[in-house]
Image 1: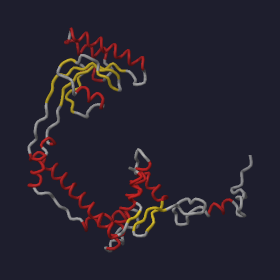
Image 2: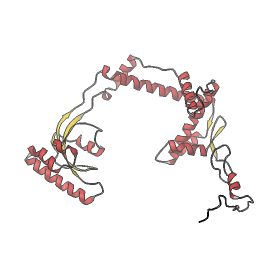
Image 3: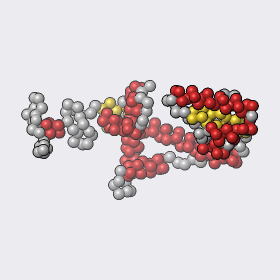
Length: 297
């Protein structure tokens, strides 16, 4: 079979130019991407007179995933505005000249130097930390935990018949254990399709969040002893025995001081950054962002 020509000399209606030449008129020479009907991408967003096009926003959206495209567009637009505000301020302060070797990370390095120069590190005092500790005692407790054994009767989530059979078998195992509770390890070895079957179904001490969410929610509501019903999860049905409950205890201030200090320092820095960005918006007027954000509400 012969090779096809690289360029077909087809012309566009109302144009005397070949396709490749005509197509060139629909691309931005500055690298801003495709244009529509020979026009640049529309611009509704401006920072101090600099246009940020919809093409720019569309490229940035890939880094801002959201449930709705309007939200992703708003997040992308906001990120581009912040980047431009910081870039302009770095330039005004003479930080525009990079200290690197021309890599794309030079801009990020200049912005980081700007943040470090403008925002001072403010480490919260011990008094601040003690105040936060006394005002939020519920946040500083060791987690509740339970000790659990189980027998898993496995069935895929989409297998209706298989799940009905697994539930029926689980109910039979529960009925047997209610009469002979000492057989739990033996029944786990015979019926459970979990690796814990070789350990008598022992899962050990569990804290909230350590198992699948649906299993977690149910077992932490159970009283101590054998559950009178199968516990359902994505894996199938579980025969569950709660051997012990252990409530969390209050932690001392010294135990959580580093955690509190890091948290308060982050909160202060975030507030300082937000205030700094508001000041930059006064210095470098932004237009169009409020409208884009409103469309995402």
